[in-house]
Image: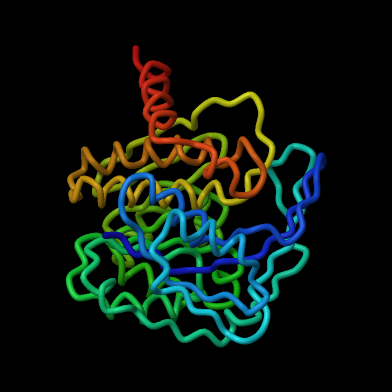
Length: 297
């Protein structure tokens, strides 16, 4: 079993073509749903009493919800706008609401999880919660600009407490204060992470381990409508695939990165969570085959 800890949110997403208000989102939501195509996934998150029943039903369809708490108050809300190229997102508003005072509890049956993903969340909480699992074989975390700017030392400490870190290129530079991505990765490995995966959006990703650098291209798409949750879908698929194989060998980690790229490509093709919820295992395998033929020479 895999456990995903992080935020479940109500998002307002503004793209040049469409505005979505209060749609189901959050880093743990995207990561958990993406991972669920590979392995049974438990969610640890909090929502408010305003959280719509239809979204609860969506989560229940994909995830084990024993770790989902419902607290009196409003659900975490995020409001962001994309420019016309969909490559730059501006945060208009972040309201932590019930997430601000959330003290997560790991359900007994989740404690045996050998694979744990700490989605973008308060780094202090992430470092604390990872200790509550009995026998972790592989743990991974993500972070964003908000935490790097407000709790940089805590982010560094969190990276030292996990096996792998997934981070986008701009945030890697901001966190490490380096301009070269190889130097960024080496610095994070120096802080304790064995594996560093740097996401480069439409340009794919780079996996670093010891002296190995494994670049993988993004799956080529003509129509991208909403990049929200692409990075979380990438990370969820990656750790979900590893948990399904119960392996942390380098060859499986490389394959996991490819699955991450493919699941990220489904996420951006539709608005909100629809790209993931409209896919199937058969469609995923079909795209993996296309990906292989795309890079084979």
